[in-house]
View 1 (tube, rainbow, N blue to C red):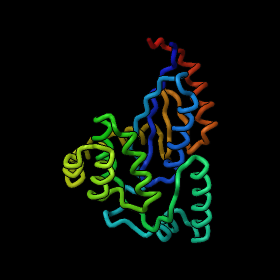
View 2 (cartoon, rainbow, N blue to C red; view 1 turned 120 degrees about the vertical axis):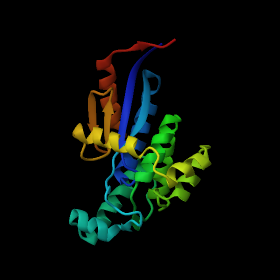
View 3 (cartoon, helix red, strand yellow; view 1 turned 180 degrees about the vertical axis):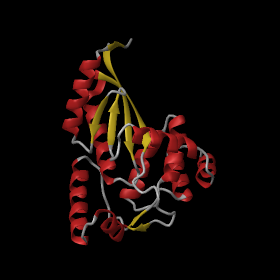
View 4 (cartoon, rainbow, N blue to C red; view 1 turned 90 degrees about the vertical axis):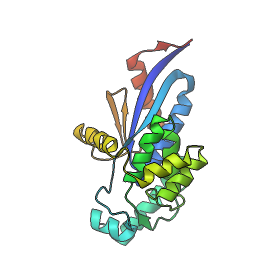
Length: 220
C-alpha cells in the first residue's frame, strides 16, 4: 500500500481556545484522509501568557487589558468560539479565569517522550475550556494525566519541580525564531505552514495537496 508521509507539528497553547478548535478540525481532516496518509502529529509549546503568575487572572478584565476589548466584545467572541467549537465537536463552557500554562507544557513535553503528548493535549484542552480547570496546577495535571493511564507519580514530580523547563523554553524560542507569533500554527514535513484554526475542509485540502507534493511511500 502506498501512503503519503506527513510529519505534523501542532504549535499551540492550552490556554488558546482557537487551538482547541484547530486540533479538533485537524483530527477530523486526518480521519477523512484515512489510509491515504501516514501522519504523525506532535505538539509543540507556545505561551500566550508567559509573564502571568501562578495565580492567573480573571478572564474578562485580562482580555480587556491585553486586547483592548470591551466586555460586550469579549462576550461576542466567546459566543463565536462556542459556535465554531460545536461545529467540530468541541464543547466550550464559561471560563472565568486564565492561568499560566508553563507547567502544562513541561508535562506535555514529558508525555511526548512517552508517545502520549497528543492525547494529553486533547485532555488538557477539555479540562480548561470545557471544565474550567487550571491546566497549570499540579493536582489537575496529575488527575488529567492519570486518567489517561500515565504515571501519576511521575507527573506530580514534574509539575512540582522544574524538570524539562529548559527543553520547553528552547522549543518556544525555536518557533519564535521561525516566525510563529500566533497559534494554532501547523507545520507539515518541516516545510509547509498552515496558520490558524482552519475548518476541517481547509485542513483536508491543504494536507492532501502537501501529501501529493511530497510523493508516496510504500507501506507493506
